[in-house]
Image (cartoon, rainbow, N blue to C red):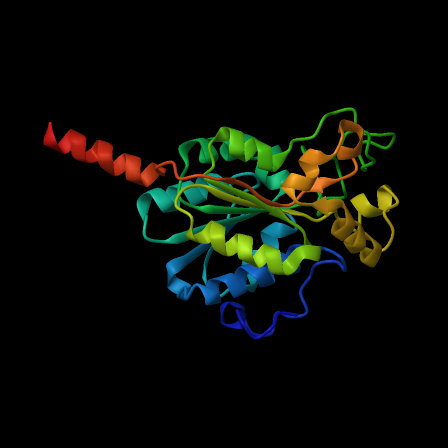
Length: 272
């Protein structure tokens, strides 16, 4: 359940929420709403865009402006909103299937454009709502409902993809690092340009069960143990790196965002 901070952005009577025990979506939503309040955002200053899937249900809980769109298209709609109304705080909430599997091309181009919005991705390593099928982030050799003997494909590193494509800010956290998650979301919201906060949160109902990760508490302990700082991660040897993942701020730069560049070019065109 949310603490008092952030509750004004939450509809009355919606708790307890719908997500499974051990799922990180509720933790992420709490961190986001606390971030809104700590930054002093008015409800009408914010637009939250969601797609389809477990993460896509978050808009049902909010009193901010919200837009529920088609599968894989959250960033396309969010880009349109920000381009048309640059003064709005635009946040796209997505799962890994929504963001980089079905919506992969939109993700790459939103980062490339450096559009001034915040993407928050719950990476649960499968299509959770539709039965645990493999997604673009399902690790190689792992079990899903469509890879019963192991996944033959390599997985996306979502944060690395965002950094490489041109995002100004990228951070990664987990539900077991909830305080840090709130700090990264606040930094992402106030950063000019495209910002990504990736939340590693293996689906307890499908992915965790299929890969024998134990109950939700054991999975949270696994996240706490395996998430290390980027500096610690870089000190690990190659075989050891497969057992751990980096959490923290992974990319932070100040390249001009899309709207700034657009206005510069518009002014150039008007003065010609």
